[in-house]
Image 1 (tube, rainbow, N blue to C red):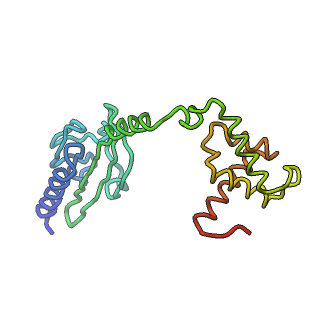
Image 2 (image 1 turned 90 degrees about the vertical axis):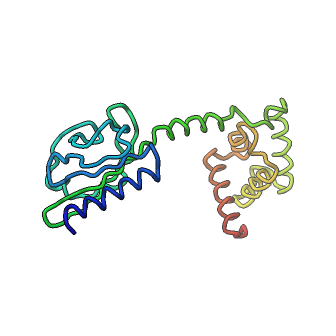
Image 3 (image 1 turned 120 degrees about the vertical axis):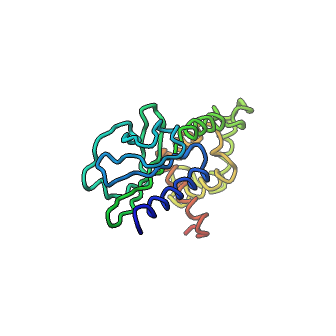
Amino acid sequence: MTREEAFEFLDRTARGIAEMFGASCETLVHDMGDPTHPILSIYNGQISGRAVGSTMDILGTDLALDETALVTDFVNLYATTPSGQQIKSSTFHLIGEGYNLALGINFDYTSLVYANRILVDLMSAEADLQSAMWRGGDSQLSAIFDECVNAVGKPVSALTKKDRMKIIALLDQKNAFSYRKSVPFVAKRLQVSRYTVYKYLGELSGETASGADEE
């Protein structure tokens, strides 16, 4: 493959990728045979503000690259432009006799970051509806707890781990953990730590997923 053929292939690929992924995707072909890596062709250059002939990189610097960087592919790396855009950047080399060209792909996902923040805000809630609807949530949770303990038939002081696990399972079945501050409440009544309650819930979740029966 001659240098002209290599450039034609990379330029065609760059143009196709830019068209496929739209205005948020900048693609370009570098001459990596030159330490200043000038741009030979570029699409959606508005992302970085660069044009053909520019020796600036996506970071806004025009530093010469060392010998290793001139021949190394960089895949899916994070970068921030001088204007604050958040970029995922990749560089792929095509090296042949008498030439070293590279395809650069820079995807600007800044808008996705803002969109994600909006989605997080939309999905956030102060508390669960069940606890808010019943002002006597604590007393209701207490009644559910007493019912589950009575089902085991032992005083709390005499409970084994197996018994406590059964109580946690019964509480979970009755949606007791949807109540506000249910974990510290249950931990205090069972005379165990909050960590232990979370641990039991995790073990029960694992058993449910695997279909294993409690020993």
